[in-house]
Image 1 (cartoon, rainbow, N blue to C red):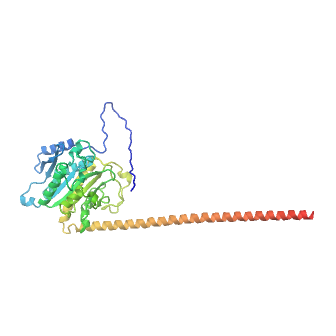
Image 2 (image 1 turned 45 degrees about the vertical axis):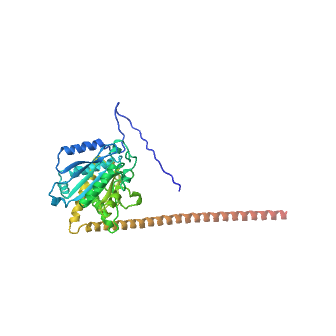
Image 3 (image 1 turned 45 degrees about the horizontal axis):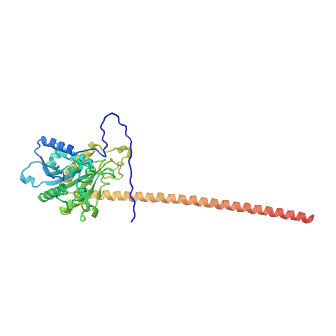
Length: 399
């Protein structure tokens, strides 16, 4: 099979304003291993009794891969009822925007907001902020020092070649054995699509269950998070990714296993989004900007608030059935609108076709009329010439 790849070259010019200045050109907002280490040291210096900093393992180059445990200290009888939550990020070194979302998550969870306190009361958070420290330190875009994409090594990770994935997978499995796993989200950056969105799996016996968390988050994180951009599926090509490998590892029944993607660019108007109601979709010029540090951190905060909202909905008298009903209604309404738009489009096509046919018919009639006129004029010319010839012949005969 023959196919061609398309390659693009981006060129730009820059005028340096100052002499002997140092200027960095970055694909996205930088967030280095040193930035993370300083941030964790600052948290540790605050001596918060609900935050524990640990070393998960050492990388191939001997760098620390650290993780945080965040939860309020409560009696054992209460603690064993808590659910587990895992956040990971920066498995691809070039996706520094994922570190900014992670910073938003950590800032929210260690803060004094009543929602953060409630989350710490109800959940045990295990957070691995940087899964590929070696790649970040050495300036790789996607690979580790072993030269492989670590997000394609989750199914059978090597303790020697992929130590951070090996030990993170064990950490998640151990947590899932100790308590119910409420959420696992792996944070990424996306280089082609806009907005912030999620990839989820599919539970065949209850497909709507995997859509609840993104659906609720779209209510909180507008206009940057898009439910309509989110996708829910799995394929053989993705079997080695964290989203699917972890999902299968813990039984393939947990609905809240996600990859959360943030665009390297910014938001884009989405025609159909839940919770918008009668409000119109924003115009392109209204949200035509790149995501800032604050935007990405806000996405992390919104993810935490969504977790609390999910728990509240789950504990309500109706449970999550009410949200599933809203999701079903949204998709039915969207499908009806799309069908209506398709009918209108087809009508426009028919109108244009009729116009084209009428124009062609008019043109054909015009050509036929012109031919008839030309033929008539030609016949008249021939008749006139014949009469003149006959008259000339008659004159000759008289002479």
